[in-house]
Amino acid sequence: MSLEIAVAAALFTGVVAYSVLGGADFGSGFYDLTAGGTRRGAELRRQVDHSIGPVWEANHVWLIFVLVVWWTGFPSTFAAVATTLAVPLVLALVGIVLRGSAFAFRKYAATVAQARFFGVVFAASSVVTPFFLGTVAGAIASGRVPAAGEGDPWSSWTGATSLVGGVVAVGTCAFLAGVFLVTDAARAGKTGLTAALRRRVLVVGLVTGAVVLAALVPLHDDAPTLWTGLTGRALPLVLVSFVAGTTTVALVAVRRFGPARWSAVLAVASVVSGWGVAQYPWLLVDEVTLAQAAGAPATLQGLLVAVGLAVVLVLPALGYLLWLTQTQAWSGAPEAPAVSAGPPPGPGARPRRR
Image 1 (tube, one colour):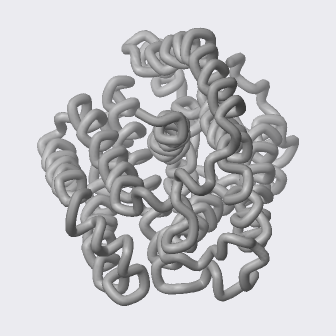
Image 2 (cartoon, rainbow, N blue to C red):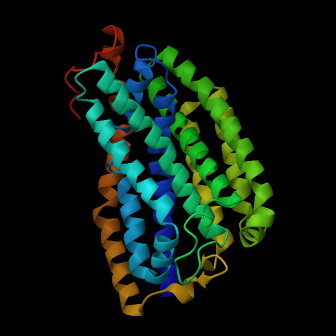
């Protein structure tokens, strides 16, 4: 394996990890946004807070990892994307900042009005951020980023593939988050919330599946290189994603929420991997290949050493954190007394220690 392929594999592993873990994080905002009024949506919002509270910042480790590996290993293409897709990238960055700050400030809101305001900011930014990240992926995949950069700041990310990519990103995030939320609710013994979330996850799953299938239609004309790859060497991954997504919906329907988490992760990971395999060997489709974009060999070697250190030092801690959040003790014991204790605490109540 060449140096540039090894670095590209590390880079895309980070993309897949951020799509899965960050996607489940972002998608929770969809359920927060559509939970209903202050009282009716209190239990669902409390579940969102409980489920993503320990991991909502940790997931951004993968975004930082991707950006660092990209601009270090393939600097010219990073500059081309940054100068061409500045608008959606800035909007996504603003969404990430607003989302994080609103999620934190909502815990300390002194009035109902403040809690509603920060809640709306958190939920809305959770939906628009993956949309703009999806448009960036669509722009790259459809060959709208010139190798020299400075492409059209608007038409580069408003094509059919970009818009479809944004919608698919929002849908997959919501589907993934819903599966994790309903699993946590079921483990905590919240029967009513589990039933409500189950119905919504089934609807989101079916709609997202239909959107993904419909998204293949414009790709034929708008992104022919990607289309050729998806129907060629990446076809097995596309089929795996379809089977895993269908299996997830079936498992949720029969209330097998635990196994549904794994099939949902497989569905998202395989569809993102399919995108990467389909556009190989291009880094910027129809413009620059991985070999052409690679930096100096010494830089790539140093980068691989840094990646190896990150695997040893960071992955165990992240793995332990994720394991903790998926245990019965975390999902069940702390929340069970709160359900039987009456209505949720109002704004101004002391935040739960995390």
